[in-house]
Image (cartoon, rainbow, N blue to C red; front, side):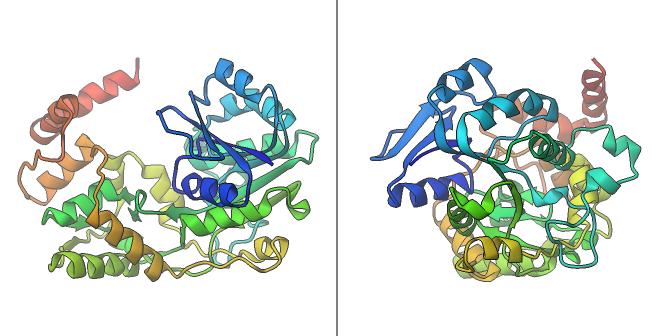
Length: 366
């Protein structure tokens, strides 16, 4: 079987390619970077947002396409028909962030933000959760049934480890450098669900060419959940074991200012401040009840330990890092910026944040 993974080098795709290759499928992955082919794993260098590139790679068709790309809803509307016509099964990676707040376990029939939210300013955006819901509608209304919509939630591996609304490249780097970890109390007390990327990949593999998956939507998560402060305790345990010290956690009452500085305010308001507890019974039924999910503690401990042993940092956000260092009065700490342009931005946000913010607003209006 020939399977195309669009944007398949992230937390889910990196495991999925190995699962599919091991069972004998010919796996093709798009990537903007150079990679070496490995037996029946084939890399196609190019940008899956580029129409000419997509026309070329889709011309011969595939048995299945798994799409991990992030599109604007307008862009996806133009691409959807071609994708659906180029495969026997199109698996669209949506997100469980599409759901509205819920006081009960979230099923595939739970209300979506797009359908029930009353915030007109938010609804005028194409923010991630809204874009994914609009793209789901495009697929559902296409007149075909050769599609499957999957809704993973927070998926982690050694490269992607989150705490509240921050990636490891901010919170873990700060922790290992002896600086405070920010975790606002309003987020810390909310329930969350984190699922290991390898387990999500195994579930996707089980849905490929699965007759019960056609024309259906699935939550792709485990069912174990815990509050974010307990997630933080797992991280602290690992750091204590590997580095023999316990970082300090800074816990302001409200998350508003921190995450506005981080540029993900809507993600916090319409997701991280909700209790996210999922029902995956439909997924298990479609896959014969054979899916297993490692515990949150086991999975996070493994991934954080492996990352600390061989760290591979991405560039920090200059704006966020400057805000945190000023707020906590922890000094300049320029060592995390290897790129000169980022370093200059960081110094600007650290010393003259008012001027930088004015410049940023002017750019947004032009």
